[in-house]
Amino acid sequence: MTILASSSPSMIQPAMSIQPAMSIQPAASIQVYPGPLVLRGVATTPDLANHLAQWGAQPKLDLTTLLELCSSAVVKGRGGAGFPFARKLSTVADHRRRGQRPVVVVNAAEGEPISAKDSALLLTSPHLVLDGAALSAHALGAREVIIVTASDRPWVADAVAAAIGERESARADRSLRWSHRPTAGRFVAGASQAVLEHLAGRAALPVTAWVPEAVRGVRGRPTLLSNAETFAQVAALARIGAEEYRALGTATSPGTTLLTVARLDEPSGSSHEPAVHEVGYGTPLVDLLPWDAQDGPVLLGGFHGTWASPVQIAGLAVDRDAFAERSLALGAGVLAPAGRACPVALTARITAYLADQSARRCGPCLNGLPALAESMAALARGVDTRARIRELGGVVVRRGACAHPDGSARLVSSLLDHLPDAVGDHLSRSCTCTGGAR
Image 1: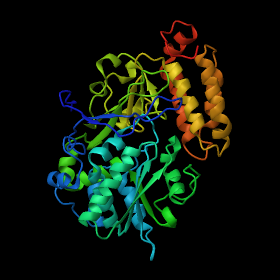
Image 2: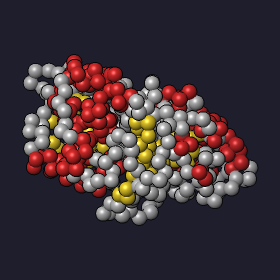
Image 3: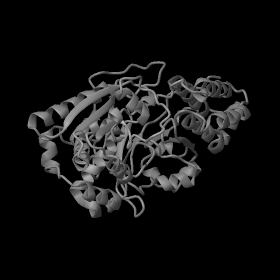
Image 4: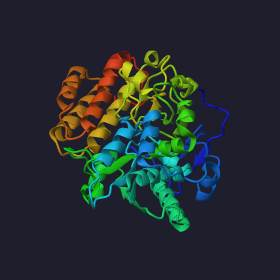
């Protein structure tokens, strides 16, 4: 499948603009391109009437039917981990207890600042996301659906509130109680345990989880927590069926996925006006990259992702297994070309941001990430700290209370492993860097 470059993007202009700041912030506007499935309604207004005209009435499936459908279509979470949705659904169902109905949580916090896919979906097709949540809730016998958004994306919160209001006015889901809970605009606030902490009235910071939320989550109840795109995929699947859904991707990875293409041309590490595309799995990666970015390094998966060289990108398809075979990460579905910026300087800037965004509740976050950021800053200044960076990476991995240290170390390690020539050029002062800290 190829991207229809001639398709006109829908410009999503939030009412609130964001001025450049020292911290890395979400972009103030998004280009959203029409897609073959969950973004097929981009050209229309996102109200309930248009949604029903396009998709028809939401089906109600029993648990067995929904499980079979999601298993047949191999639906996996689109939040980054790629966990099978049917397995999560089944776990929640298996742990239902008398007097404690399950809870459904739509995680649209999108803590990754250069990701815009969940924001784009809720701005253009919010009712498809809510349909997927309602469908899952009915199958589980849940009566409560909570949508969590980030406070640094207030336009998304407005879109969610409007969609909930429409459904309540139309009495579309009479058995469900909807609520919207904005959370902190912080990188780690989108982690599942941080979301649960927020819903419990505590700081939106991740904690060590001894029991998965599918067993014990909101108020101790079994909780189906997944990201916004996942619920939209489930809703679309229920409308079109497994056969049509499987025709959109590959045999091993059916369906579509949303990807944010965000150029990192600015030395601050911020992106400007990212573009959101929906593509079938198996789409060549180069079809999504700007023509002038295909011969340079690309950050894949976001700030917890991996740098990739042009050689690694050549012939690569959008597929989690294909990425893993090349030691790359699809992660949050971000493709971020470095453009004119130096990847060493960018990585130093991003690592400092990640260290600042940590929960500071364990040794790797409290001490390890700041030390890693300092070593990256020294590397950006031209000091060869590669040995120290590798040492620190080994210290923080798999020792934190959450996955934040692991993701941060993965980013830095990928710079050294996948872009050794760029690092060498930077240290020898033959780098064309114009935005480094040297």
